[in-house]
Length: 145
Image (cartoon, rainbow, N blue to C red; front, side, top):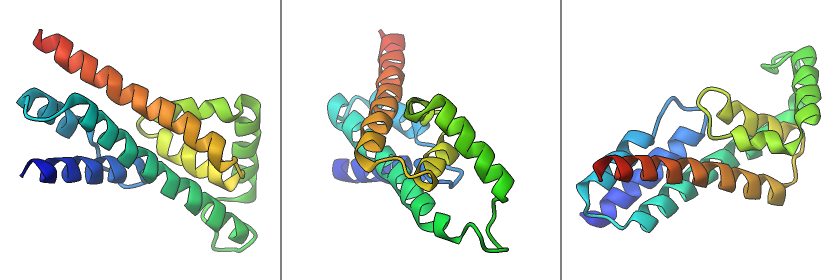
């Protein structure tokens, strides 16, 4: 049963990092408050799931970019150019915002479209998402005393 909670957290964190409208924070807080699970295991599982979900976005961005000249492509050339300019202006460090709701998931997709190197992408996104879960755990456990 305990193993199932880790799997559920992984799946929630993975799905939350994709363009799906999911969230994993409430599940993490609930598991932390239950005091049945290892803190570091919960943080590792949530971070891994969330980073792998972002990796899916990055990969989709890399894959879909080749179709940008097609009429059916969902982003106009003007919007794609605007995103490229913003991404280049703020650089790969903008991926530190990948943990934010609403803008974080599209940001990881744009990183793929704009060919952000995989190693740097994974490093920055892992730092951002791991820090977010760490702060959430500290806030939760600090609140509990």
